[in-house]
Amino acid sequence: MQLLCPVSWPDYQLVDCGNGQKLERFGPYLIIRPEPKALWTSSVPYREWTDRAHIRFAQGSGLGKVGKEDSGTWEKLKKVPDQWIIRYKKLFSLHLRLTVFKHVGMFPEQAPNWDYIYRSVRRIREKEPQAVPKVLNLFAYTGASSLAARAAGAEVVHLDAVRQVITWSHENMELSGMSGIRWILEDAFKFVKREVRRGNTYQGLILDPPAYGYGPEGERWKLDDCLYTLLQECSRVLAGKNAFLVLNLYSNGYSALLADSLVRQCFSGKGNYTFGELYLKDDHDKRLPMSVFSRLEL
Ligand SMILES: C[S@@+](CC[C@H](N)C(=O)[O-])C[C@H]1O[C@@H](n2cnc3c(N)ncnc32)[C@H](O)[C@@H]1O
Image 1 (cartoon, helix red, strand yellow):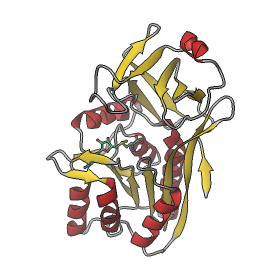
Image 2: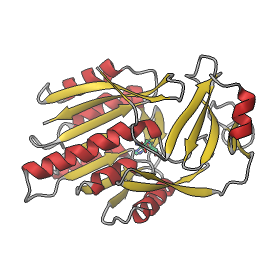
Image 3: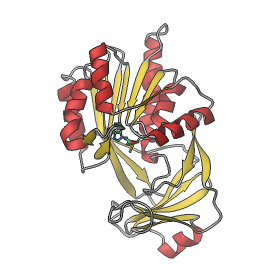
Image 4: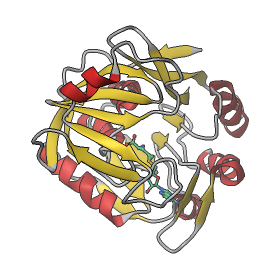
């Protein structure tokens, strides 16, 4: 079991967490957001947080669906632009924006997965210098994982069900000085089933599915009901050698062992399996668990 957190990333910092909230720095701006898993008391009093912060997410009012844990409004405590840019190592850059559901367009705990994706594509390219590895990123959101794969030289297919996040990913690609990513606006399940029928295969598969979601034509995604079957279909599109898969799960309290068991069963136990948790560490050494992952290397 691996426990991984972002390292050497000047543009992101978890400053403190506690009392159901976290104080983070994204580039030059400090943001206070709700964090249900921060069950303890913050290391620094909240008054000091608000003195330092540029923006705060006030829960339960205004935008978003009333009654939903993530709904609320952003309150600017200092002068802040509506959009700004952060860089991830020498790999890519991302536009950040204040979205309706307390997110800014990037999940910082995913950094170890981006590094893994980059390394995996490089590994495959070293083994097969003549071929360009193909990577499929499902539930791809604003595209950080797609950019990590592209930066390493993969041919990338980026799929999401929401047009606005595909547009955002496209902007992130251009901002990062890259090109050539193929964008697919479709239900993840539907696309993978079609790829199985077409006999297409990929050297890299990336999945970061939500608890609930909808495809562009109203196709219903429910993690509990759909994940196992989707992984079974995925096992039919992953290349048989020089290939990798990353499954990330951040909802329903799913454990790392569950992620590993699912992947092992769907991929018949062939290859090297690793699994673990992604966490963020604050400036006071408190570790905040954020998601779990399972990885397969063939
Ligand atoms: C939390 S995000 C994944 C985060 C992303 N992997 C990252 O680290 O940047 C989940 C994404 O799944 C997409 N989604 C939800 N239901 C979907 C479906 N049925 N098919 C494809 N994408 C879907 C959402 O639009 C959202 O962008």
